[in-house]
Image (cartoon, rainbow, N blue to C red):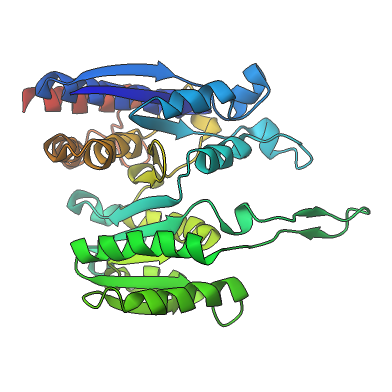
Amino acid sequence: MNIRIALLSGDGIGPEIISQAVKVVEAIAGKFNHKIRYEKGLVGAIAIDKAGNPFPDETFELCKRSDAVLFGAIGDPKYDMDPKAFIRPEQGLLAMRKKLGLFANIRPVFTFPSLIEKSPLKPEIIDGVDFIVIRELTGGIYFGEPRGRSEDGNVAFDTCIYTREEIERILHLAFQYAKKRSGKLTVVDKANVLASSRLWRETAQKMGKEYPDVDLDFMFVDNAAMQIIQNPKRFDVMVTENMFGDILTDEASVICGSLGLLPSASIGKLTSVFEPIHGSYPQAAGKNIANPLGTILSASLMFNYAFKLKDEASLIYLAVEQSLKQGIVTEDIANDNPKTTSKVGDWIANYIESN
């Protein structure tokens, strides 16, 4: 199979973790006789510095002509520490989602048996956790207009807007995922307070009649945040709006024991984007200590979702699982003798080549 992949390393540890994912993709390509063509593009703070735009038109065109995008992370302290900065790296991420029509972010939440003790939660609570959060990605308060500040600077406002069409689009996807799994779907909202959430709930109730084989339930977001900690095994597929999904998935990420472990897929109208859920971790940039497993597992999702190559995806997952079991891990996981970012990538690539 001929495959074109856009590499958007971004900022901070982005280039280091993307390099490890490329090693793994190359190992898969060699084993399964695929031909991979890579093209690099700018996004985030580095794109502002070099092109004056956090998501340049050239990067957008690169994404459109590619079969998939492997994305690292964005963010830089010089922008984080300047609340008055007019252009910010995060605007590149929002622009990428909007221009590529990436309306759905799919984040699996799972545990590895060898890392149960690394979680801050009790083993009996998290052992066997396996659910998916489907987050609406191009609507809500992150994109709503109007937004801004009053003339005197003492009042700020953001607007949360959803259309029925946007809600139906993401809910159809969530119902389909639920049908493929255990047939249970939880819609998370704040319908007791927010008008936009009441539209979500009304729309989901109506659509539930189209999917009689799916057990549909509803949960307020504050309760969902509590249940993710108290009883995460009660969830199978969760769907929610943009900001709630952003917060809940970061909360859920601690279940597995490290923020560096979980991957995600953003899918929609054009090219899909695959990325770890963590940020740019600028304090670790260039030190060869960052955990590359979330990015490598994102490559596994890429082979599964973008290319429908399940054997390739499964082998990457198995290689990651074995690296964890054998202690080939970075310092965020290892109690002693941690491995470098590059050594973890090398080990996983070698495992794939020899199995």
